[in-house]
Amino acid sequence: MNIDPQKISKYVNQVWDESITPELVEYIRIPNKSPDFDANWQENGYMEQVVEQFVAWIQKQQVKGLELEVVRLEGRTPLIYMDIPGTGDDVVVLYGHLDKQPEMIGWREGLGAWEPVIEGDKLYGRGGADDGYSTFASLLAIKALQEQDVPHPHCKIIIEACEESGSYDLPFYIDALSDRIGTPKLVICLDSGCGNYEQLWNTTSLRGLIGGELKVEILSEGVHSGDASGVVPSSFRVLRRILDRIESPETGLVLSNKFNAPIPEKRIKQATTAASILGDSVYARFPFVSGVTPVIKNPTELILNRTWRPFLSIIGVDGIPDIANAGNVMRPYSSVKLSLRLPPTCDATEATHALKELLEHNPPYGAKVTFIPDWEATGWHAPEMAKWLEEAINKASSNFFGKPAVHMGEGGTIPFMGMLGEKFPDAQFLITGVLGPHSNAHGPNEFLHIPTAKKLTCCVAEVLSVSVTHP
Image 1 (tube, helix red, strand yellow):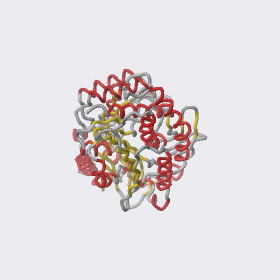
Image 2 (cartoon, one colour; image 1 turned 60 degrees about the vertical axis):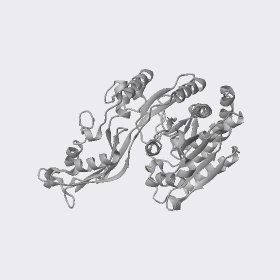
Image 3 (cartoon, rainbow, N blue to C red; image 1 turned 180 degrees about the horizontal axis):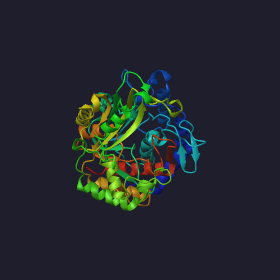
Image 4 (cartoon, rainbow, N blue to C red; image 1 turned 120 degrees about the horizontal axis):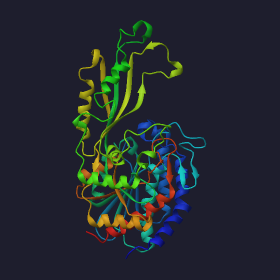
């Protein structure tokens, strides 16, 4: 039985308006930061508060056949696991997470990380789009099919609470639940991005990520700059020279082949297609200060930069006082937190070893240079998409957005995808999400574009219905 797009859309819109949006408003109020950003997450209880909220909502939906469990492994963040039997033996896994990034500074007046605000089509606040909505959208897509008596596959929904910390708890849960999860035919992940809010975007790859603290020590204590400058090398200048080993200071391109990988021709063609749709919005969507330009203006090359090429970000600094407290002193050390995005096919463990060797080898002036890695995640590259899935994604986008689907890589990292890709090499993947222009996940003024979330829910329902009829 085929779905009726109008009925599905009407039902989904109603549930979003009456139930899901109010739930997300309350969810945003809870500062359930991921463990890396809240060392006392267990004592503070915010994570448990969200789990209780989500479980209460799930139970109210009365989804047929639903088995719900909050799985708890000692010393680890909880995981919500749902099992919904369907037609046939094929298994579809739907994934999302409920933990959040920290507050971040820079929210405009009237907004805040834990202050939900609805303006027009947008729900502002931390975690709504990244990606608290995924629990509600995943279950609603299944419920919408049941309301129409449309068959759906056997669905397993996994909602973790450690994604923003690198999903280091998740492998233990996947192992513990492996017999119950089985071998999925299809994995649907709602934690990715979209190039615009006008069509369905399927993510074809995700970059990997490595990082850690790079520290340059010169002195045992700070000394007067008038006395020591010109004699004692600046720790900051040494730091700059070492960082130049990673990237070109002129272009930002990462130099070593150990952090680069060939870009498949198909992905280049898909990037070209996406660029023709997005045009200058590839870079215009970012909040540039007046007069600032992107690294280049070719949209195709920018898409490839953010999806397949490695780039370095400095995301934290230590050993440097704020300007108001800066005395004329040569500081004893400079320390920075590095975040190096990797191509989807680059092994993160090997890259971490290579980065440590590159940074610590033969330091200028004999400075004490240490690099302490503290995270790594190998990226993910989608397998060849089955024809039925490509057609289903395109049809769903046309039905609910009025435009065909677009396939493009994303620059972020979802460790779960690399994990599942390795564990289930024959599975198909639909990786998508609502993080579009200006949505600013992890930053200030994060928002959920509600109409896109509604349409995406409908698209997931259609793909689930089609998967029942294809091997």
